[in-house]
Length: 283
Ligand code: AMP
Ligand code: MN
Ligand code: MN
Ligand code: MN
Image (cartoon, rainbow, N blue to C red):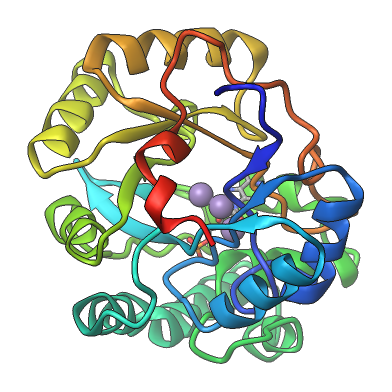
């Protein structure tokens, strides 16, 4: 059933969100979320706390993570839902994926230094909740709070995207590995916010073909990263490729995020919701 307030994508202090798993759970519950998942980037250390907090608020819960993948030279995010968070191969894979972040952060800081911004590494570190998970978002918060940029979107445009001084190309997990870790741990793999990637139509087609070939079965249709037109476009993609549909705010922070937890349109009724593939994994 599509008329369910499911929010299956958000971030805590364990990655690049600013709220704790418990704070997110109470915010989600207050907004009417019925089925929730915390999907920190490349990390599952918040899962037990999130599941316990969900239970305390009477929400159903699915384990979650958002895995960084490199595909056709772009970073693609794959959300895993309902997998066993203690699965050894999954844990090892995520550990490897997190591994290059510190060195990358040093290089980002060096790029920013050359653009005249001093001490960005230490500056960003002050915002980091998990030392293994320093991300561009933490640099963005530092640049906003130090008055160099007016908001995080401005930071990404001027400093942190392709061709800008703080952009460092990085090789993340492969699509095959990420989908494999999730599915072999009993979960469902979902292409996160497909509307956000700078792919040509051919590249996007290849992404979905390969994703399916590796065992992926879902796509985010209704997400805080999509426009209304993209809800329609990716509902068509779900039908075309025979994928189940997911719904998630991608909430990071009350001040930064455009869409709050649970505050999204419902999934279009004719699509199969991902949670129908995961009935035995819902806690
Ligand atoms: P990283 O994993 O370090 O490359 O950081 C990626 C994160 O940066 C994403 O998960 C978003 O939270 C954030 N992000 C990416 N692009 C933007 C943007 N244009 N504006 C604001 N935040 C962004
Ligand atoms: Mn993020
Ligand atoms: Mn993402
Ligand atoms: Mn996300």
